[in-house]
Length: 443
Image 1 (cartoon, rainbow, N blue to C red):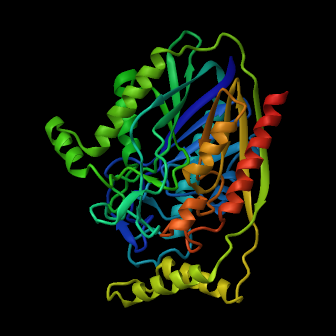
Image 2: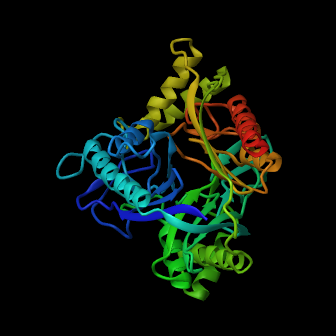
Image 3: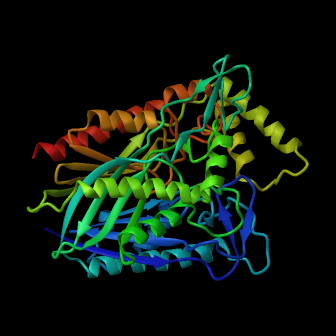
């Protein structure tokens, strides 16, 4: 058995606040469902999942500053589910609209206090519990890039075009799970990683955890209302819950069954968890538990003349739109790419925090990026662990990290205006993650 503690806190605002995740600002005045943080303390490490779009280094420091000294700051692993219906915690992304709308500073303080509270509670309530790993499948995410006859790609591109040829990459429907049990055999909690951002309703104007809310409701309906549920966004930089084909068929079947898309996802995930749990029990022994936190310097994206031309064209399109927002972060990013190509700006290596854990015969590793599947699959295929759980958007935000084929096709998410690190940095991330996993499993 291991010392394990759980805690969940609600951090849904009680005042209007801006929502993070789109190119133009949105303000929410009410909640569709709660925004929550769940903390899972295992020995001297605390895994934390927050219903946020991202967690920057500054947000992380806000939270760590509120923790008591007995909790090692390097052992707190903070992750975001990547909902587009949560608080803006980054200054300068949108202009504040005025009125009784929470400022970024207020949102940061509000979220940090509640996230830190969950961490402390999980830490202080650690008691001996059993743990077991499991694996399953549930269809949640889909590749979101359409690729055409000329080799170019488009995020959410039309597939009914005669020049549509394929999708831009793989789809991963895996579900990686860790279960914890009380000494008497009662299921206490589940941590699960799904390779898909929480963005079914990504353009909504209300606070929401998106499909993770329905997943929590469904799992508690099946396994008990006191069940703790920690949701991780596994690498999914080129994935989304939206269909590029089969939209009509899926909508028809949901109407027949009387469910929403979010409920449909939750039922699929619930089925996967139930199947996995049926074949999984708590380990009788005390599994090996080791944790390493490393800092890497990854090379920045190499900007080409082609990249600069793409950025200039997109910038012209943006400002030509009469409804464009001059304070949007997007044109600023496009201008940075042009300045880099002109030698007016020199990007520095990207400092990246990497957490790697061994839990029995399972491995666990993080990255701060919206990581394309090609990189995560390389790690999983070569890992020494019997099962490898990967989580993105952890301990900072490094933007997208697109694969080689993603960059060749282009489009948002695979161009330097949305990627601080390019494929060369992705290859280094893969090798350094594997190097650390191999060291943990060599002992």
